[in-house]
Each structure stands twice: as C-alpha cells, then as structure tokens.
Length: 85
Image (cartoon, rainbow, N blue to C red; front, side, top):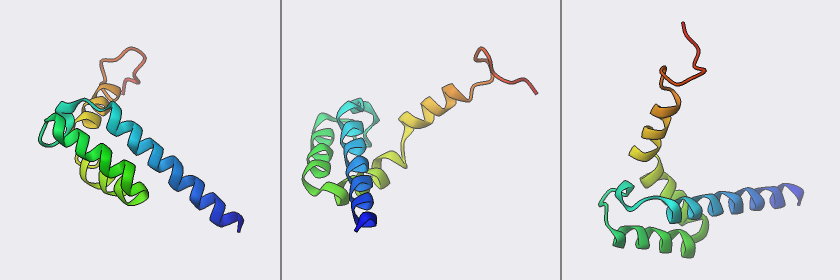
C-alpha cells in the first residue's frame, strides 16, 4: 500500500513538472514554433495526465534545443569558477 502511494506521488510530481514546463516554455522551442502547438501540448498534458506527460517528455523534452542551449551555458569552460584542466 505504501509503495502504491509513493508511485502515485511520483507520477503526480512528474505530471506537474511537465505541465509547468509546457506552460513556461517559449513558443519558439516547440517543433512547429507556433502558439497552437503550445496550446495543444498543454491540453494533452492536462487532460491525459501521466500518459500526456510521458508523451510530452518523449516528444518535446528529449528532442529539445532549449535544454541543449542551457546545458551548453552551464558546461561552457569560459564561465567564472569553471575548472581548468
């Protein structure tokens, strides 16, 4: 029973994270880059709950230029405090 509750809580947190990402993500970082696609994905994640969130993760986040850009900023060697080899 406890395991079931923990799994439900993890699924809920994942769903909220994907919905938040969808709402906050700039339109330019969706594959088609238009407002309709952003609205469609927000509705899919909201109404299909864990299935929609999982699809959003697979299709949008894993093929993402936005996070690749942020990762490049974090891993840039010219940032102050970066380790020098």
